[in-house]
Image 1 (cartoon, one colour):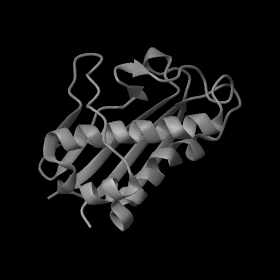
Image 2: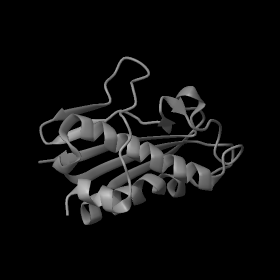
Image 3: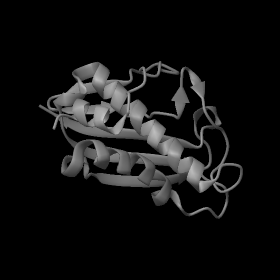
Image 4: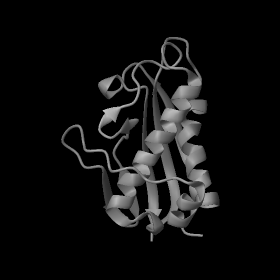
Length: 151
C-alpha cells in the first residue's frame, strides 16, 4: 500500500509545510536521501504549545506534540519529492525541552516514531536519538527532524 493510501486509511491529512523561521529550507534532497529541518509543533503558522516537558507540559501532551512535529516533517518531504517516493525512514532526531530532572525523552519522541511506523510499516523502523535540551526555538517543547530514503 502506498504511503498516501495509508495516510488516507488512517484519516491523516498532511498539513501545509511550515514556513521557515530563519535562513533555511524545510527539506533538502541529496542523492536518494531527504533531510528535513527541525520541525516544531506548528499548526496554521501558530506554535501549539510552549514550555518545558515535566514542568508545564505533560509527557502525554509532549508525545502528541512530537507526533505533530512528525507530520510537519512528512509534509516537508511530501512537498519536495512526494510522500510515495519514501522507501524508508532512516533516522529520527528528537529534541525535548526538559525541566530539570525530566528523563523521559525517549517516550516523548515515540510520538513521531510511532507515526512513522503507522504510515510506513516496517520501512518506518529507524535509528533515533532523543535528546533533552534546556531551550528550543520559540520556547517549543519538542522539535523533530528526519532523514528518509527516497526512490
